[in-house]
Image (cartoon, rainbow, N blue to C red; front, side):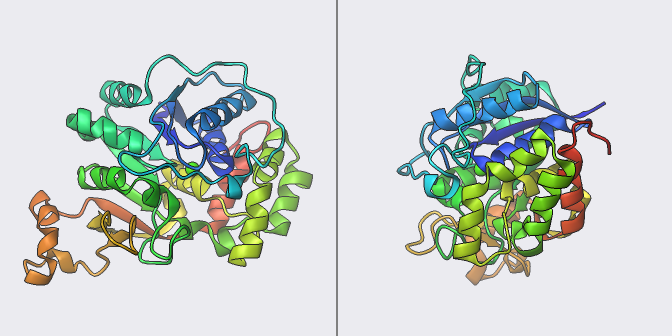
Length: 329
Ligand SMILES: [Ca+2]
């Protein structure tokens, strides 16, 4: 039996590759894709998600959800992904319309109907937080909530302290991380360095695998490639959402992890959206300096798995396998 999954996404270029990996994986059944405002405005994210579903010759329904964060102003990231979010590749408009229904209702109903489902969030966590606020008991049905987001005790990418998805809607992220769901934090830092697709990897995609899928992996991320090199000094394309999806599909791709309390900064002047990971487990003490963590202690043992290291070779092997015309594992 394939494992059931629901994907919440602000679909731009790296989300699209992550969606492709899940849709094409024989052991994963994607029940629905729910779209949220984030890197892209909601409507463009929805177009990009539907295009990706059709590229994969699937009919997975795509539902639209929150058009803005819970309390914050909207900030998109066209500068990073291109005006259409897909590297301005002029992909055709999808044939299918968005599915009827609101993403938040769909998250609630799908999680209720599928005990043990894996939830993967690839954008700001607005839709999932609204679902949890409305129907808190859904958290019991989630076997894993894999989050592309945050920067586990390292530098952020939208401010020095924060990664975009969490920074964009920190109040939503806090609701999700406090909910007690089995969270898995896959920070943006895991896609850097040797996890990047470098020149050799891009050549492998385009000239060796040479399918519409492997071209898609590289082409729609062309804006991100430039920025990654010129701004970050990284070797190639960074793919945070596909890295998180790879770990969702195969947890052994995360080569080092441990469980900790994780809190989301919502008030900080310089630290909005910071993922504060209690790496040394100091918050488990009942001392004055950590008294603000009492909520977590009272809730029990840490429930967030923090991914610290990635098996870059294994992650790329999975990406390549999902980019073949005939998927073979
Ligand atoms: Ca995303």
